Length: 251
Ligand code: PEP
Image (cartoon, rainbow, N blue to C red; front, side):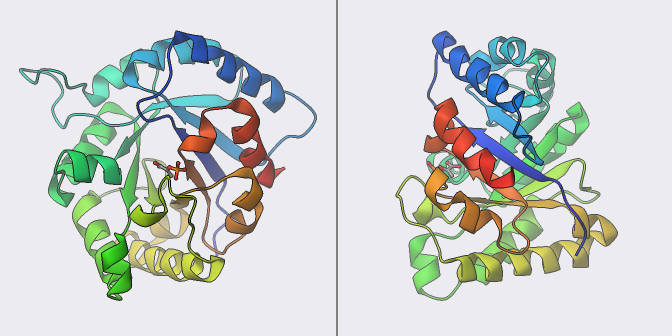
């Protein structure tokens, strides 16, 4: 198994205001302390806060990312933000295909792929989310669904540097429920296999994050599952104290 540096990424969703920069400052202070976690750290705030938080994160190891981008570089797309704009504001990553976007905005695998391509075009690392619904899980379709989403959402030519996968079972997001470590291991092994089959050596090194109700109390167990190379964290990333509790799984 290739050695892959973990990434712990926070997805603030539609939360946060300028005052939230105090959380970034607090986290930066913790990261500068004695415990040096062996993982990269990323915060994806709403687009309105990218520039502000980039400034707050200056001099620290915290990277800043977007939560979504349009596939086009610019144009008549009211309300949308392009990957180039995110980059210009200070982002290094962008999440694409989050289940909330797939559900709330009807984003198809093809749309997610176009967004991941846009991220690559702009020089951003795309975090491509996949995950089954509870009904799909109950019908035994989890691996089929995940393989289909990977096939349709990942651009050809994706590399370990440009692309991160996040496995987020939809039923585990924001619910406090998580799959067993065994279940996570099975899905992540299947994802790794699919990545290796399609991307060869790059596929062995691509980071596969687990997301869905990760918190300080379960992070250590989930982060030691084979082929789990970090976490995508929603609710527990909003407060520096909680997020640090998850990052510390790598200390
Ligand atoms: C997410 O939305 O990406 C997520 C994992 O949320 P939570 O950690 O709150 O379940």
